[in-house]
Image (cartoon, rainbow, N blue to C red):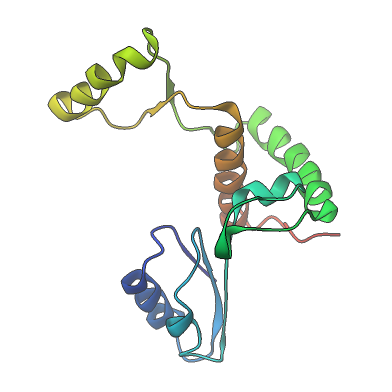
Length: 153
């Protein structure tokens, strides 16, 4: 299995080449290039839409829109419990978070700090919902790396 965290046509092609002759699975974090998708019938290609983990409708246009799927919420709930256990045991860790004071007016200063000082390895505070969705996705990847079963029951 290959997980493409960049998800553009060149990286998709590169991942397809890495999969090898016996085929496999390709997962992306964005909608995938349909032309490249069908260049190999031995590769199952799909992409992940993080908000679907809540089980509610994703009201976005085009490929990004999704119907409500209650099973996704049950799946997410089970995985949340696994993640909570892995976090409490120290098997996985969240990305460092840096919360800065000053609200929206300080955003230009924060961006300049990143440019000038080359701030790396921290994530700025964002909306809790987007952080939760991103965290669930990143932990699913970590669970795959740990060879933990994440299939729906």
